[in-house]
Length: 407
Ligand SMILES: [Zn+2]
Image (cartoon, rainbow, N blue to C red; front, top):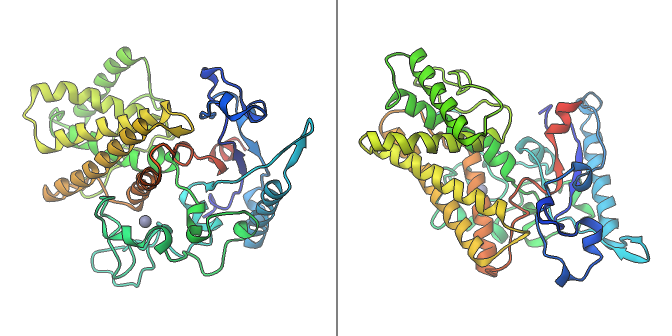
């Protein structure tokens, strides 16, 4: 809660191009004809050039008074509304700013959107009978007597019929930020966007990596006892680092880093840098490429490998793509994202049938399903208009936890 209420709103542009493409950026690009500008993702490069800090308020000022936080949200929304309605002038030209959405971590989204349905409304135990409002502001999943949020199949899940225009508003009173910003009236909640940084790199990816490594350490990489098994894993990590030349920030694995506390508790990666999740996924893929040669292909190993492979294709496709994905890129990313969702669900089911506490199905996994679903919905509307910006690292208006770390 305190983390969520340390507002550091900033904005990121959705146009421009990455540094390595040598294309015009920002205002320079905006001043050119559309044909001259191949839109790209401009997250790379100096953050002074692609992030615009609006304000920062220390948590102490607002922790006992919510109204300051909501006044700030409303004020920011008003400023953005003016930039859309009236715009601003540079060198005789008028530029207008359209806010496409707001990203942030799950607690921030819950608070900024005054959400009555959020990730923390999960059933606390199998026997709990509290009436639950639902875990997702984009659909009715997780609601008592509602569809299961654990179903990740974005083609058949029951919760699909409660998304989009069928999604009941997830708030009792409209969030102040929406008062002045033009947004899709039939799907207001969709103004609040999930993003890969919070949902994959700092969320589901850590669950996937943590569970996969614990499974390997307890089975095919087991070396008699916990200490030996972990040493063996770290030797393999050093070997991989020499080949890949991409060391993770955390240095070496420990049981604590994998949040392992016995076979009844679900593990997860506890490394602080979200980007290490990508490195660990590649390392697991490397381990499996060797292990699978030497071992019987049990269903879990095959599924873990499939998970690494599909999420790798999904992420690489997005990072290489521009602002809009080509039809082929969109198809590839959606297929790979869908494969990963089914694979993760399958891993959870298989682990459960083996009585192993691995691959927990949390609301974050459901949120990842919404990311892929959003792309699929856009693809069905127009195959060449699948937008990358909604799904990369959090664009437009973002709560940036890294600013907090620098305070
Ligand atoms: Zn949902």
